[in-house]
Structure formats: structure tokens, C-alpha cells
Amino acid sequence: MSVKLTTRQVGDVTVIDANGRITLGEGSATFRDKIKELAGSGAKKVLVNMAEITYIDSSGIGELVSGFTTVTGAGGSLKLLNLGKRVQDLLQITKLYTVFETFDDEAAAIRSFS
Amino acid sequence: MPETGSGDRLHTDLVLDSNLASVDRGESLAMEAAQLLGFDADTQQDIGIAIRESLVNAVAHGNRYHARKKVRLRIWTSRAALTVEIEDEGRGFEPDAVPDPLEGGNVMKLSGRGLLMIRAYMDDFDYQRAGDSGTRVRLIKRVPQPADG
Image (tube, rainbow over all chains, first blue to last red; front, top):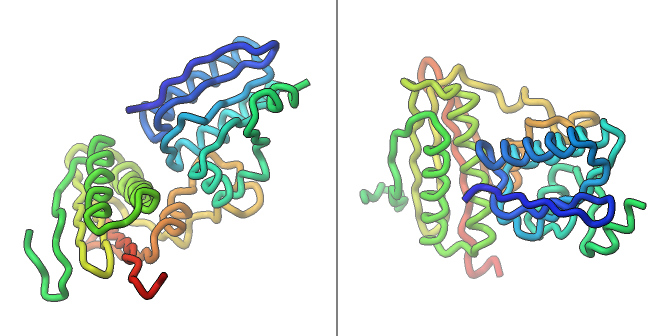
């Protein structure tokens, strides 16, 4: 199974609910396309809900970085919600925990954008 | 499956095409072998990711998805360890020459973390040139022994 992404709007924050695997190939391409689409439509506040992400490889990590760079480069911000232990460990291993703002609570994450 | 004199049992010996379907297949086989050895679910996934990253290196960076170039995957199991060897037909590479993804601006690079993840998830990783061209990498994950607690 690749990744399935659904978006919803909470106020002016765009929440991406991600489900499945973000790995080299279809998964990473799907994620990249979604971020480009949102950035192109002017979304400035993006929250990626990783609760249902079961697996992520180095390509997927690269797409998270790419998404962060794309959104912040357009004057916005991208944050992460509900990281599982595996993704948390990966952010530690790769030192990306110093880059991404992460949350366990959606309401707190939404408030952080204002 | 044959058994070697060292007690290692050959679980898998496959020659794979250079595509992402091969990566998925190899990852599944490694996780299956890890399960047979009794690794817990988390460790099985660690091993799966490490093998996936190694196979991507072979298929994408080594063989560059070339239709005629193959990747050989071998997996051995023993009571002591899971051992995986992956050999490609690419131009070879020097892992030590890969920029440190944890250093300065490299943290924000879009790629270059595969070896870091392999080393984080496996106990041993080494590599050597295979024949005139290509690279052979060996990854080992040791089975926790009762004395390890």
C-alpha cells in the first residue's frame, strides 16, 4: 500500500491526513505532488497528520524536508502532528527534530499557527 | 534450503531486476527471515528499512535502473544472526565519501540519509568492490541471546 492523503481545512490551517507508507516511488511522489498543489494554491499553514503513517524511508524523509522547504520558501509554515515512535526515532537519527515543529495534540497544533 | 558449514542457513538467493518491485520483494523476504529468527516486530521493521535502503542504493544508484543490470540478494539465518548480502553491477561507491547527512547544511538536504539509516538499524555494515565493477554490501543483525537480557 502506498500513501493516501486527504486534506481538510481547520480555519486557515490546511491539515493533511496521511495514511500508509511514504517510500521511494509512488508514495514519495504522491506526497510531493500534494505539497506542490497546496503551495501553488496559496496554502501558508500546513499541518501534516502522521498518525496513520506506518512506514517511511529515507526518500520519505527527504519529501518531508522538501515539503518544509517549499512551504516555508513561500512564506508559510509546515508542522507535523501525531508522529509515531518510528518517525520520531527517525527525526532523532537524522537530526531533523531540530527543524520540524511537532505536536501530539491537534488543537494545540492549530493554535500554534496563529 | 542448503546449510553452510558455519551453521548459517541460506534463506534467499535471488537475482533481481533493477526496479522498485525488486526492492519491495527483497524487503519482504528480509522481514520474513527476521520473523523466522524471532526478532520482535519493531526490529523486523528496522531490518526491512535497512534492506530497503540498501536495495535502493543497488537498484537506483548502482545499476541506475538499467534493464540488463541485476542485483543479487542473499539472506542467511543462524541462531546468532541474520546476514544479508546485496551485490549490484554499478560503478561502485565509497560510503565514506558520502557527505555526512548530520553535518551543517546537509541536515536539510533532500537525500543522502540511506547509509545513516542502515548503520542505525543494523549491527554491522561493510562493503567491498564486487569483481571488475559493482559493489557488494553485507548487513548483519545479531539475534539477542538470553544472556543479553
